[in-house]
Figure 1 (cartoon, rainbow, N blue to C red):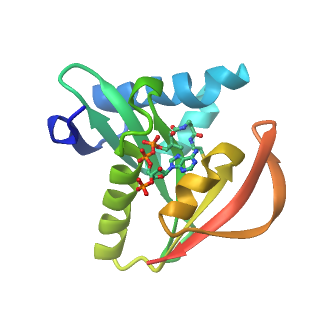
Figure 2: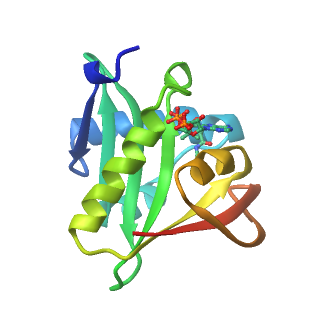
Figure 3: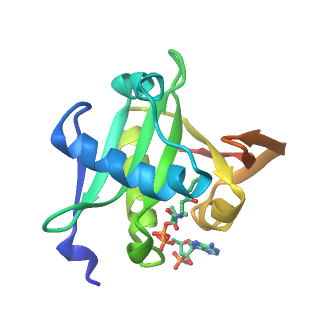
Length: 148
Ligand SMILES: CC(C)(COP(=O)(O)OP(=O)(O)OC[C@H]1O[C@@H](n2cnc3c(N)ncnc32)[C@H](O)[C@@H]1OP(=O)(O)O)[C@@H](O)C(=O)NCCC(=O)NCCS
């Protein structure tokens, strides 16, 4: 697959493209845990930045950036690449774009809660592990951070 054939794009909350990213989040992050989003889950999305990766017809990957209170620290969450597209550089492409945008907006740090399977991915991208395991959505996570 040629990464140049994909469009990497910040999308507005509530648009058709936003709902396409939501479908990927459901498929990749929620369904395997027998979970799905409810209205309250989505209310928090309203204030956030949404990045999507699209092929000709559909969304294939997404991530979300939340601002932590009024600080210049951001939280990266809901990082998901559709199964068929995993391992081809799309996750890395999205994280680099998120870091570029946050740096341009003078953010100083990104934090995230990594699932166990995703820790090697974030280590490759320069994120550092912080603290002990904790449980979110019923599975183990570790906090990771990266200064910008
Ligand atoms: C984790 C995930 C986002 C990574 O995205 P991806 O597109 O598959 O990863 P990429 O192909 O961009 O990989 C980027 C780098 O990380 C490395 N990497 C990715 N997954 C890895 C793994 N499981 N183990 C070791 N290295 C890994 C790649 O080798 C690559 O290294 P390189 O740049 O030196 O070649 C994606 O696989 C995914 O959506 N997984 C399921 C959902 C999930 O766990 N999301 C994270 C929630 S915290």
